[in-house]
Image (cartoon, rainbow, N blue to C red; front, side):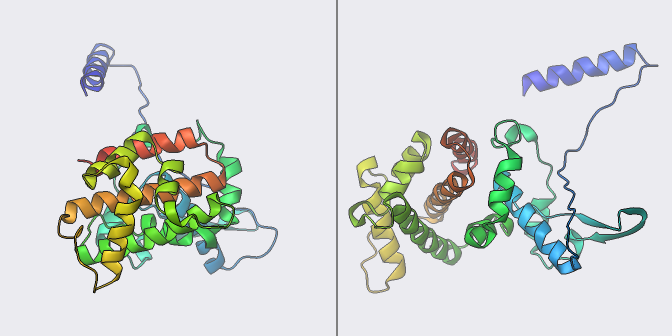
Length: 275
């Protein structure tokens, strides 16, 4: 933007004027963590722990995240070290690797250590990784590429998650009348709810019925394809990503992230969805 360009130009002028001065400029930002276990751990156990940690950051950053390197210190001896290049040794789609290696700007991370307490949410996340594994996988192994068949399956999967969220909100009993609309209205920001209703070209009040009808048309081959005939691949992708934001906001609630912060997360990444 203009402000950043003006700052960069001014910095160049200052460097030229004060050629003997030394300037330290951070060009990269990354996350690292130190694991100190009371029990002996196998390399596989350490790798799985690293995966669980990175899966949280893949959601916070809305793109694949994997540890690049795992460095193992034997008996805290800095001279007795084994380093494993993790990212290059994993069997991943090339698109996933490319997304994981893209440059990330902290300004585009709505959830960070300034507005959430990572030392509080990380233990909750790690103790519930089995529960969050399905939604984490959607972010961790994202390729940035969708086909009609893949997005059909994702919408059906996300609808199942919405039903579970409905039961959570209703203390174990699914409110069938508002099976899909209740989770959306409970967790969705105004912008996200508007996005879904506009994608269906319908009113906000009919969001639940639209999602229910679409889910049934996708899941049952003998159903008349009324909505499916009106939607194209771009509509499906918007619906899929919007529902994914609702589901992940429920996960944020479970690990202790405030709904207002989650709404900022929704609105930030909604900008990419609607492009």
